[in-house]
Length: 586
Image 1 (cartoon, rainbow, N blue to C red):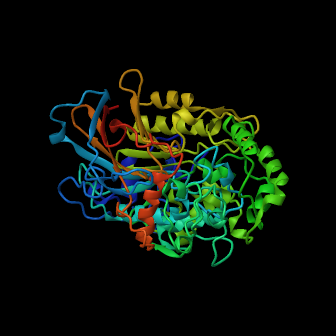
Image 2: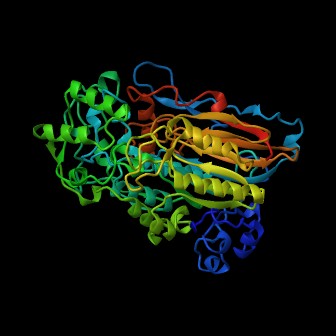
Image 3: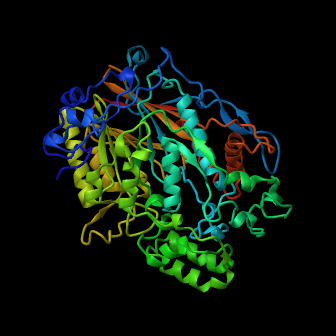
């Protein structure tokens, strides 16, 4: 069955015919091609001419002839200044590069021989949050730090600052190569909300964003509720966070919902779906009319008895409430505790088809490609996975690891797994290198609940995906997120079939990072993947009087560092941050 932008057709991809048909340019100009299903799965000259699926990406900024470490954590990283309680941030020491040799011995002369194959940026877990959405479960804050964070109202400002950082990079940190594209690996939104999806697409492709919903000029959420459970920035109330040193910031909430403009990325960008993009609350099966009506309605629950909240969250963690029956009953039982908010149809959940059509909307094309990896064929077939041409010898594969049956962990259906196997087999024949992208990590693909839209189809977990990837010499890396933590894992198989799993921290929890990944041929029988972490363009030092967009982005980072209950291990070890990952050439 033809697959838009995929390598899933029976006939092997002819790389060089594809590149010639698309009017390809050299690596130094920044290749970024998508594949359109058709004869042999190749892009046609007609597609290229009309700027469709086979279009060549926009040229990246001119690269310097030397490594370009400015603006990365190889130069500096945010770190807390001395003190206790609420800690202010400042310039911290750079993070060194660590050579990882578990899968291959690094050659002594590789630095002088290497040539660049590709370079790109990974965003993951942006979590652009409509903090006033009625379906948010902030009242579970005592159970999990992810239920509510004091920095969340600034997620859009933080994401725009990250876009600015990428736009300012003059080249890849090691090779100086132009960057080819940006890939998001899911949880672009937080609550499967149309409003959040619109914000995400405008942040990435450019446009004006007003991070507000409900009342057009007034914030209506937990941060002006007078409840001590949440940081009340505009008042003197001694809430739980102020007791830990959080400041009073007059005008914070007005500034948080003020319109701002994103310049949009100056690179092509591609999209991968995550559980928070697909499921209400990131964990409940979509399509429930009760939740859809509640999302757009005028009532919001902001507090809950501790015993009720503990039981609800315990059930969610165990995967015991995928359809949200227990959550629905809690909301019904708490009607008298709810507060009035302004109804807003924009808060409605989006369907998988609406998610795809929004990406295909010309208003959100930005630097391209059209659909950001997705195509009309995805809409027609009800799929959210695809393959795309990164460079002459490098293929990208974006998976959909969300489970429509519910729960925040993931899996793959049999149809997608078979498509992946065909895609990798074709890449093996073509002697391509492959980078696989997904939201979930191999360890968080344990949810094998049946997809209600595909009755009888098996679901496959991380162990099966690892076994499949390990069986194909074309696979270099599996790049993902979800865990909000930097972690790089070697996966060794028989012979020369081994690859690296690269998991990157989120941009909502501290340390708020994205990752540059460079692929190089060492011309000694090995390939190296260089990973370099980057932060947003916001200054490390904050000014409580500065509520400009830049000042808010800086506060976003500092508030995240100080968030009560936040995990302190998300930065990972040095070998999970800036690295050189060596492996045998397949």
